[in-house]
Image 1 (cartoon, helix red, strand yellow):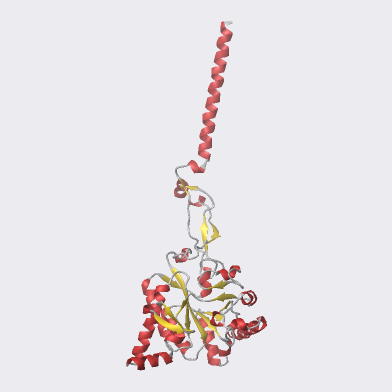
Image 2 (spheres, helix red, strand yellow):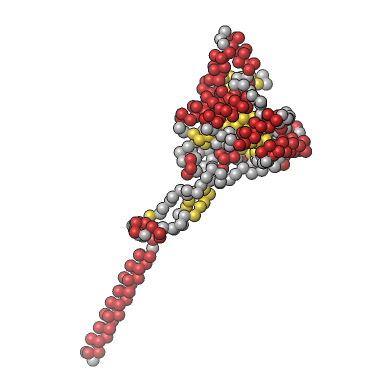
Length: 352
């Protein structure tokens, strides 16, 4: 009887020992198989080398967890990264695109051309500074072979060609939708006959548009966030009168008025009210779209001086409008409306 008790107690002890041992083993296995518990676990994020200026902005994302020992001893075991769309931060201070990290991206645009001599000077200036711009073309200005050649030259040198209507009717919102389409189609046809492409961007004359125009024009509408008012403040007439009023040379007057636009700011009167135009440099931010006109004689000089300032700062990257937008989000689509890099409320059909 005593022997049976000893055997029973021994059996119980052995069973308990086996149960405890199995619990310990299972606990260790579970800990080792959980990557979050490993002190050596590292998540790798590497910008994709395949990103380029002509595609939607993308960045690589990790596909899983990789231990540091794997990276050191067996590089072939590193997961292959996959691409995911960059998430832009509207109004962010710098680009979210790895290609332009830390940069403020802006666009310089020119309206109402081409002009036989002034557009030539603008193209020469842009080429010398290595800058690509967007030109919003009027179809009625494409009647001569020399003007057609300027559009082809601009396109061949990497500038973006866009539609600015055929005859610049104002106010543009007074047109019927059929008249709007005729204005765009005539200019599209003229531009396509020169460069073989139909523009994807449209800037309505005077910036005038409404919901019907945005929904039926078949293009992304591009407005602006910084207006140089070059057509008024540094027009040939204004330079001449300013020189006479102040007893200085026209060269001195031109330089003074250009500095007003870029660095000092100025006041002007419109519809009986006085307004202040702040210095362009004070308005520069990531996503800005700047407005000049290549049909005026001194606009190219003002743009050149601004470009020098921008390039010397080291803070900015200048791109054509479509490329500007694509660095942070998808390419511009028909019906989109932009006043700077990101879509305005109008695009979402609000605030009409």
